[in-house]
Image (cartoon, rainbow, N blue to C red; front, side, top):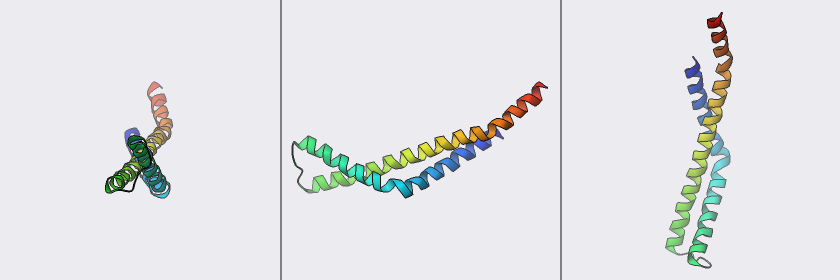
Length: 103
C-alpha cells in the first residue's frame, strides 16, 4: 500500500506541476530564454546585436531552451512535492503496522 500511495502522489504531483507550468511558466520561460540569449550574444559579439538570420535563429533556440527548462523544473518540483505528500499520507498507516507487529 505504501509504494502505491507514493507512486500515485508522484504522478499527481508531476501532473499538477505540468499544469502550473502551463498556467504560470510559459511566459517567464519565453522571456528569460530570449533575454538570456540576447545578453549572451551581446557578450560574444562585443556590442549591439544586429537582427540577422543567425541572431533570430539563436533567439528562437534560446526561447525553446528557456521554456523547456522551466517545464522540467516545474514537473520535477511537482513530482518531489507529490512524493513527499505520498510519504506523509502513508506514514500513519506504516506506523500502525509496526505497532501491530510489535504487539
